[in-house]
Image 1 (cartoon, rainbow, N blue to C red):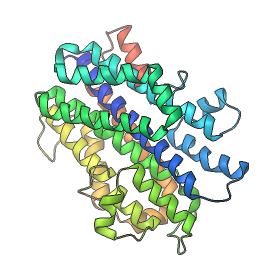
Image 2: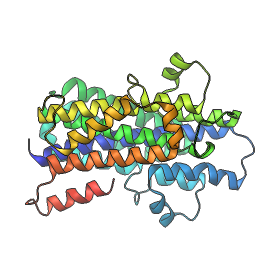
Image 3: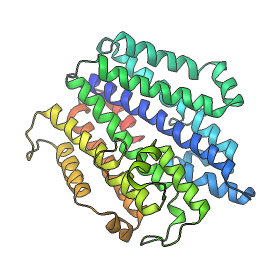
Image 4: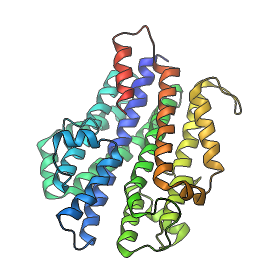
Length: 336
């Protein structure tokens, strides 16, 4: 497979997943505001700022907005054209990557992605947003799930499909860590909190809802919401499809199917880093994570995921002789 085709399929999947996850984060946190009382202006900034920080776009945000108000944060994460990671811009990027490999896609996939692209750029999207933000976010989430179904049901499960899987699960793992990181400031620097206030329980429930994990969590842990249990579920579950461990397991499977190397061996750094990280997750315990400090652990996890992404890029996509396209690809990877 040509490196440019692999690159476009990989980034198409990442951008679709990114748009859906941002929609979940903003939607849930807007709804959570209705349940939290006594939020003055200072507390509102304290509420919204961690959401910007968790996306990794804090520097870009403050270039455009002086304060982290609800209006500024939601505009930045949803519509802001200057923010390459806003919902609108990520959907545009997904569609552009799909356009470059149109001959590799099915008609159903192209039509649905194009429909979503036209929707987010239409006046109707702004009207729906002003009337009912939840309705707008539901459109984004439903379309993303629809696209994933089309990808799995209509694309040939060949090398290109495995690049799609790699992009999707790498992005999903990264966003799960960032969603968890939104509420780390409610925790002690190290160790498991002994007391969880009602407001904190609401906030950790919102973390689960942001990952579409609330119903699955309740089937295992019941309605008791505790940061330790939430972190255990979202980081270490081996069968919840948005946990970091599950995503890294699927990512490991994808990179091995692309290379064709047997389990226990590796032929590039992407396989080596992914396999090592999966082993760490399989043998980790949540209490060890809290002893390190959840925020520090999540930071280290994001670095490992970034390193895996860079290794994938170097192994399969970067071509030194492809200038200027190669230069553009390097820039695209470095933006993440």
